Amino acid sequence: MKALTAGLLTALFLLIGPVALACRVCRPKVQAAIHTPEYTVNLLTLLLPVGALLLLAAVVFYAPIIKTRLTSSPAHG
Amino acid sequence: MAEQVHRGPLISAGLLIGAGLGGFVDGIVLHQILQWHNMLSAKMPPDNLVAAKVNMYWDGMFHAAVWVMTAIGLTVLWRVGHRRDVPWSGRTFFGALLLGWGLFNVIEGIIDHELLGLHHVYEYTDNKLPWDLAFLALGVLQLVVGWAFIRAGRNDTAVRGEVNS
Image 1 (cartoon, chains in turn green, cyan):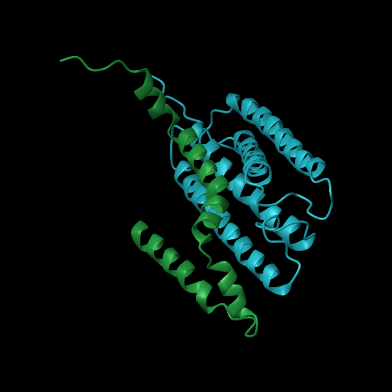
Image 2 (tube, helix red, strand yellow):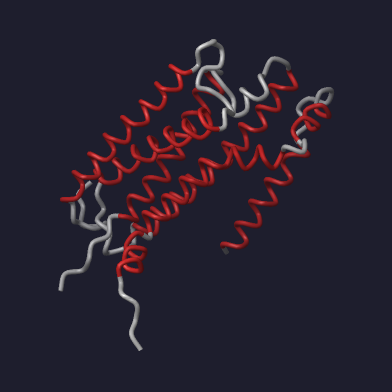
């Protein structure tokens, strides 16, 4: 179910971009200005704060497990 | 032996939903209604139709990301509601929402406004720093108030179904 949802969302995001045709005249220029060699850098920098927040939330969620692993002494034998 | 209490999962859910809603406030109010900035407006000022539409695209990617963050937060909240070890505290959750919104403002403010310079809070002025600092100050205030609510919620112990809401 998770994999299906993730797959559908990814496919949706990949499909939306090329079919957005609100402006027939300027769309080629817009697409050219979006899909530059800097596209990946722009995307990653734009998503950086969201990634940081997700990581922080994961740390808060798993805090007891992380704390236990960090404080427990290594097993003997 | 009494079951151990875990507040982290509820705080985590509130943090994600609060940050997501904070992202929507930023996008809807500052990007679309007031039009003070866009995601890449410092790199590509929206001073012609093509540049404005490119900024619109990156705003959309930002909105998609905060939507995913909100959806994950809702999923976490749904699962937390079934756990007997997580107190169902309104104060904890409200505090976490504020904390998440504040974290969004502070993290986005530091990374996007100051470190990367993707955009500033108010682009149409020569001195952008006061606006950026005011945005950060709002975020810090939200962090403090949110933290206070979470601390107040430490005394709440009832789990979901036992709370009179």
